Image (cartoon, rainbow, N blue to C red; front, top):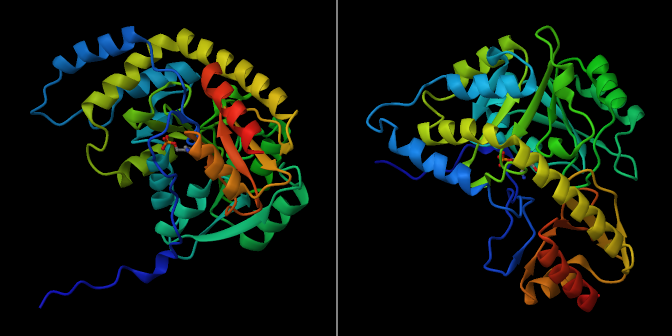
Length: 353
Ligand code: PMP
């Protein structure tokens, strides 16, 4: 008789990665853009959707979208692979290059999905620590790479949740040292002073992951991509499910590229607002860390993070409690919102403290 058997035991799943989705007035917990995409994009997309042949499968290789992204980044279309959010890109990367007998290297604290997806794909996780200011520690990087011989080394620049971008020299040093592939997650790359995309080469073991979820204001669309060597893209395509990228999403992603000026303007506005928020937090009883992204990590000096998180929630402001994340005891992370949302947050956090 059929039996409801236990799930496979080798994935070492912990609590997973969830941010509570509660109904609040001010939602500053998941690093989205506080601004919707341009109305003209919505209208153009609605028109494009009416032209889709919905009885047919979509373009399996997303030809037009990849060509558009290649043009945006100055690479060839064969160097672009797109999927349903950068999380799925990371999953296909590790289906391709991780697996039993292989490991990834991560430097904590960093984006939890790198190690989570590694475990899901049966890949061992070798963990290094960041320096006390959360920058990469070159000695620690060297130690982890030498000890673990990882198939994939993850960098995250700017790093979620700590906020800083890695300088070019740090990334090139890791690329020189790493025995396997280096994956630079640039989910917040538009806020950074430089991009590792400029280092991508068909002969180098480097791939850069990007997303539409943040600065493109398209988190609901679930679209991300990787820029890497053409051979890496071909191997990933062979492992992605057939027709994994639906026609609506392909159209949405391609159309968005026409609104780059608006996207750049949003990045400038959010960065200016981040600097205002950072300055205001400096006046409170908190430790903060400088950010090159659209969020700020902070630690209340005299209140437990859970109490501050709950106090904010009681005032209808939702932030991320990072207390249980490696190396982040007592820390919270706030996403930069609109000036009005940030004022509400600042008033609430001042009251709670
Ligand atoms: N990478 C980083 C560093 C992130 O912070 C996020 C979103 N939290 C992602 C990847 C995933 O983004 P998405 O799947 O929406 O593209």
